[in-house]
Length: 232
Ligand code: SAH
Image (cartoon, rainbow, N blue to C red):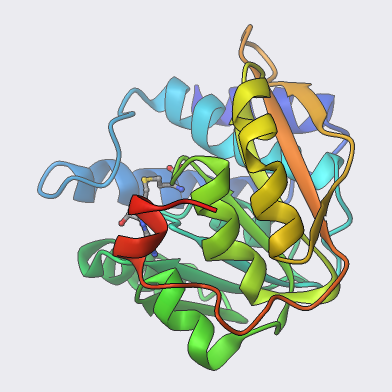
């Protein structure tokens, strides 16, 4: 069932299908571990296929990920980062999350699938930036925070010339407007957002694309309490 959904979905994205066995195994491990720890609220296999795997895969149709260094900020159970790496093996991926149990799960999945070029890091984005400032071609993130906050977590990690990609719903217009000041303070420039539909569903999502056009001032990111209390 999941296999047929992935076949159909990837083919409608014109993406190759050789990653499907790895995605199926990842889905199996996710279902198994989710029984004993809270990794994801989505448990129905068809929904996992569509709302996790195909939603993540959509990004490959919107941006060139080949040979890129990518950080997934607040990856949770690995979305969107891990499906991206499975489907585009030339990506060098860092999966970052503040919850250790999620990072342990991701390490287990990477080992099980013998994935190379993936580093699973337990930590907070604002602390990770101290050592890894402006070192990634791309930062991606889904369902972590509103854009003004998210931009301060993600843009410091991106090289000048790279991009920050935020997966949002299509009704994020007011969030986008609220983020204008933050983006320019952090060295970002909003590009044209790209909308897509998850195959086999009516779900429409929007990829917000922020190009890094200048260095992020050293005072950002601030401590999380400050970011939250006083978003840019
Ligand atoms: N991106 C995943 C998970 C979303 S849940 C998905 O779309 O399915 C949000 C995740 O972000 C949680 O796992 C939480 O631990 C993590 N998170 C929140 N703030 C963070 C921060 N400042 N640094 C790193 N991870 C963070």
